[in-house]
Amino acid sequence: MMSLWTRSLAARFICFTLLSLVLSQAIVFFISWDEHGQAIRKAAKGEILSRCASLARVLEAMPPALQSDILNASNTSSARYWISTNGLKDAPAWREEAWERLAQPLPRVTFPGHSVPAEVRPDFGRNTARSSSATSSQWIDLRPEAWPLSRPAKFLYLDDATGMGLAVQLANGAWLNTAFAKPAQDGFWTSKSTLALGLSALSLSIIAVFAARGIAQPLRRLAVAAEAFGRGQEVVPLPETGPDDIRRTAEAFNRMQERLHRFVDDRTRMLAAIGHDLRTPLTSLRLRAEFVPDEDVREKMLSTITEIQTMTEATLAFAREDATAESTRTVDLSALVESLCDDLAELGYDVAFSEGQKISYSCRPDALRRACRNLVENAIRYGERARVSVERQADSVEITVSDDGPGIPDSAKEQVFTPFFRMENSRNRETGGVGLGLSIARTIVRHHGGDIVLTNKQKGLQAVISLPALDGGPPPSMSRQVAGAKNVTGALEKAMPA
Image 1 (tube, helix red, strand yellow):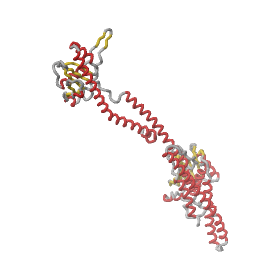
Image 2: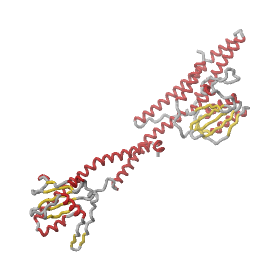
Image 3: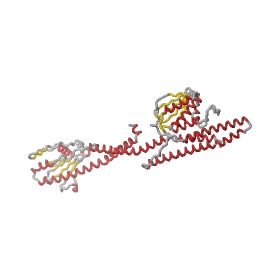
Image 4: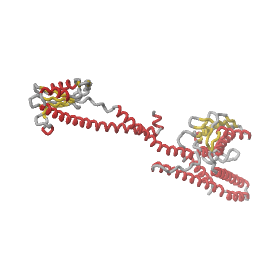
């Protein structure tokens, strides 16, 4: 249940909607229930006063022999009428007698050829739970404006619900007694109210699902686009439609994507322009160095110029490849890495690939192959041999490259990814490259939404390329991709003479 709550926007909408429904119904019930009871009590009081006044007129107009039949015919399931000739009892005694008469079933009334059975005994169980205020109340003299007859009448409540009694003295001195109490009403949770509440909850839940989908679909579309853009794929601009909040979010994402593309393109063009423009002064310096008479000075100058030219050519090649828009396609990642290892093994390098399961992955194959090649060549150059494997993890795909070299200090694990940084003190071309291999590899991998981690093992160094699984994980940070391009550009700007 908690996983559904944390993962589903529709579930949250439904829960909040149902909670609002229950709270609103409860508030309405508590506010209106008391008013409803008072209205019923007031209507019942008016009804019993009117009936009793009418019955008193009828009894006074009819012969005494017919009074008993008139009273029996006037009795209903909620009202009882009787005449007392011995005076009016006190309130507690009269109340007990009234409840006894109300609890008795109506007598059988017989007509020629027809038989109407007696009514079922009413359920006054709840009404008999009389409160102390009702029990202690005494007879109340009705005011003339509340009673339609000229003669006085006395009134009392039988309970705190609809139970009430009325006594009016007739012309002959006898008292007409009236007891009225309706059976207890059903509570709020009846079958009809439960059905109505259930239908309301169902309709609100359906509306909540559609509302949640209307919000979740643009968010899901945004997440997919951010994930694809974070991996360097070409993303079609999101449709800028819907409510203002969603439309502005889509507009902001499209603007961000456009700005990042423009930023990276500008930096890449600048990088290529710097590398290209440096060729002419480097060639001029080389020609001038040839005329330096001191042989040692000349060799040092030519060596420095060669190193600068090598760095420039490497940077220019990187800029050209980065500017080339390679399309994203799905390939067998294991076969891609295995073919790279086979090519290097045919060249005489000690490379071993551990075969694993087939892993289909959406990537830019040429760029990812170059990143893997840089790691494998580093392992061969500094660790004598390379052992390569590809494995699928729970939320990632890992390409592992291990060697048997001395490893690197922990303090240098991040520094080795800096452009033009080399571990060896010598700048001899025979002992290493220009220091762009790991930087380029990490830039490519981060452009796919992953990262490279270096770990010292008991023997050798292990480099792990961790690529996010296509069906999980949050969208990668796009600032890391821009940072890769800025690092290479900034390092080149520092390395090149003004």
